[in-house]
Image 1: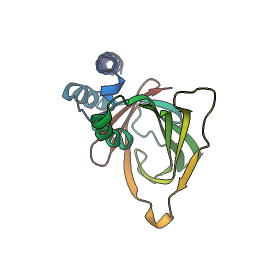
Image 2: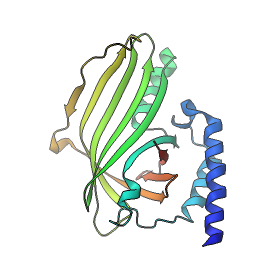
Image 3: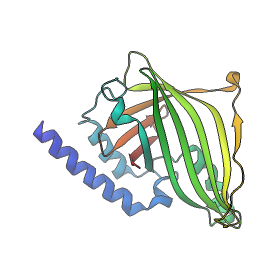
Length: 204
């Protein structure tokens, strides 16, 4: 146990240093780093929370988490890549996830992103969804029921904002995806999508 704790501490220090060296604008756009991915895999091998979705660990899982690394980008940053190449100047301010336990087998999740668009100001996007799971307390089925967009600082003016536009997703159009929480402690959370995309979070 002591050996695992020492190993976790060393791996987390190296992981955070390498992610910080990348900078936010690179670490969450589609640009996988083999060294970072290798460190995460070794960290997953000494995961102290094997069943993060069990009722015993939900208190550690829920809360607000800042995304600090995405091996293949996120839904938002992948869309912004082409815009950034065309117009340049797009700056991601932060990407985070809010998790709230609805009951023993369900979590409400809000995936949020704030970014600056040249001349248009600061925008916020949010996807509201639900995690559900059964016997397997590491893998959840995720569906999103609504998306919203808001201009929080139009044209760079911080004194006013525009109303939020919320777009519900009709039930028959909702897609279900698998999400694995492959590592969890008080300092780091790692998630993996069904296609292998790797996400590293820190408490916000």
